[in-house]
Amino acid sequence: MKPARFLTSFEMTGLKQKPRSLNRGFRYSGGMRDIPYHQSPAKNACAFACYLMTGQAMFPDMTPEQMKSMTGWEEGYVLWGMKYWLWLMDQGVRVTNIDTWDYDAVAQDGLDGLRRISTPEAYDFTVRNTRDITALLNDIRTCFAHPNFTYIRRAATIDDIADALDKNHLCEVVLDSRTLNEKDGYVPHRVVPLEMTDKEIVFHNPAAPEDPAGPHRREKLSVFERALARTKGEVTIYMRS
Image 1 (tube, rainbow, N blue to C red):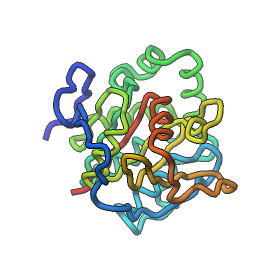
Image 2: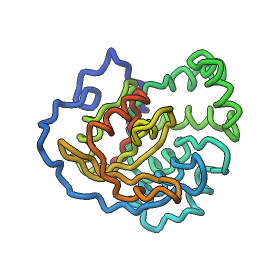
Image 3: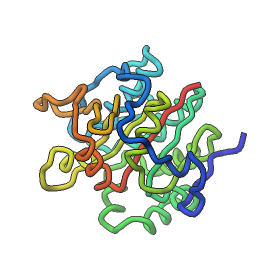
Image 4: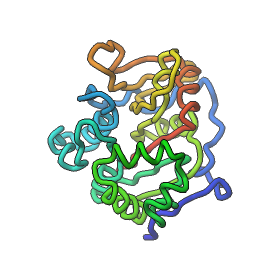
């Protein structure tokens, strides 16, 4: 098997790279996904909760302690997905990530690549809030060389989510929680979609304890789509054989 490729906007010609035009009004097959819900264990820890949700959906015996050990998560630091993805791929799960971030530059040129593709503020934030930046760079290189990994470099869309749900794949979405809650500001946030129609979407939202709309939150598709577009769209899809 060939290692994963970095697909650019100039190469998006197939179904995997260019989502089909969906028939709005079609209720996507598979029904509501039976995915366990987990609340965010700390502020800005939505990624940990979402990884635990999708992980337990595929491997029911997975525990929070195992996820913490696997990912190296520590409260107060950014949690990157590469260690989780690598573990899944070693179990035979195929992972597709759709995002605009230039991982290729980081994989090839390390910190110089990260500096080149980031604003000074974003670069400083990433380095300051990543527990081990050297380990992250190594994880990116290892992950993107894995034969079970595909990276599609473009903004993800609502049709990518619909296509994943239609095929009964698990997925995670990064969107703007402020737009999602129809408030001012900008806060990237990760959620797990469960079901979607042409009018609404149901998803697990690893919200704070005071937010009652955590599990099985229903939202207008138009609002969700605006929140996704605000982050330029990131969707990660898990395909288990």
